[in-house]
Figure (cartoon, one colour):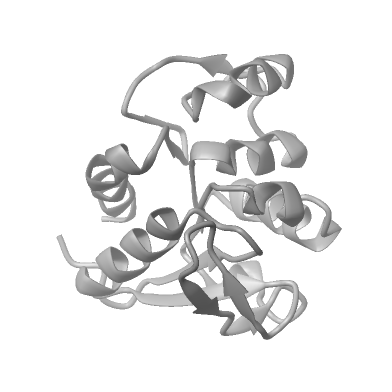
Length: 171
């Protein structure tokens, strides 16, 4: 399936899970999408395992109308992301626009902070299950869950099916 003509934002903050950033980044490009790394500032951020990634745009520059989807990687970065109100608002606005919002691992924290998971079936890394359930989600332990315009997965092991589900949601 081709994503030619699609533009995908992927959030970036310190201590992202390296594979959960880079695998979707390159997989979406391979499918034909333009992918932009969006962060609080233009800088090089370091993943949990030491891989660097440079932001292309700041959260203050990117607009919901500019993108077709948003990917939120896990690691420790979502804890930093949700401290930037504009990043939380962007998640909510992308969702309200009916565009794809995809989160893996601890990325689900951003969905909870944005208030978009009430009554939604989803998955995540098991350690944040209680947080998501307390935010109103119907959490299930499954490699990938797609409901409405939200795609979620658990861990780096799920990346192939996570990316496949994102591509399907955009096709």
